[in-house]
Image 1 (cartoon, rainbow, N blue to C red):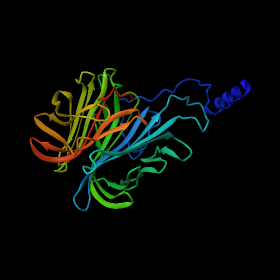
Image 2 (spheres, rainbow, N blue to C red; image 1 turned 180 degrees about the vertical axis):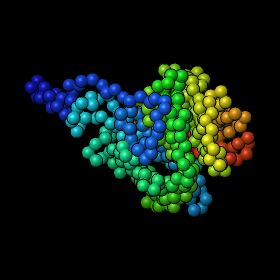
Image 3 (cartoon, rainbow, N blue to C red; image 1 turned 60 degrees about the vertical axis):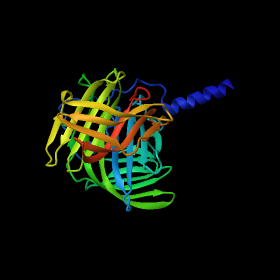
Image 4 (cartoon, rainbow, N blue to C red; image 1 turned 45 degrees about the vertical axis):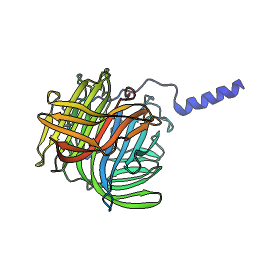
Length: 358
């Protein structure tokens, strides 16, 4: 029996390369690097964490509004990079999908995770081309994003067509997340994407149209040691403009770092620092499943403009503890500008159940 046990250990050692020379050293985000496209549409495996994140509002032929979220993550592991085994789990591919429908009253959502490799899961380095089993997101040569995602309760088959130039976040794509220079990511957005396609539920496809927002972000060190999570909005404004704003929060709910980017209807982009931004919770909603309390309605003051976000529905909590290990609120919202309807977008809130670990 002892011989058999040691034989199994030896086989595992050969397959996984347990004679590890040491953990990998991940690339760092540095100020001054110029993002280059189409290369930076693709994956950056030398960095620890990366995500492609599409959210938007859809409308059915009878005028019914729906919200959707599709996120693909790439996460580099601590596994020895010198291990040449095909079974070595060097990269993980993770994906989340959600549909917000007020007729259901809460999110329909699904999640997947697996190691990259064997043609089953990958994130291409040349451009946005990501696969996790039958879930795919791919950028075509003309800039469109094709999403095919057969989830547990629904299937998304969507085309996202850019209507504007890429919006670089922070300082030309270098986005600070804390007081230290290395607490940053490379980050760009594609707002005002025109959406068309189908949503299939219970075997019945329904044609949908709408608009969406896509974020692509990668880093190796993001959060300050005192940070527990963040609040983020990506808003497609009705006049053709776009607003991104976020705050990194401490356990006491105070901002560790804040930033916003505003693109006006003429395409002029303004980068706004923390002294001109304030997040103010307006209404709280408590999850009946996890007990987490979220400020689902919030006022975001940027300079002297008050942006109020109002959820499509309160229950847009997503439990991803089987993949990323976190619980977060990810929801479709409308936005008022100084009390007047101004657009639609998505609000993301993390770290309300427990501190977020990346």
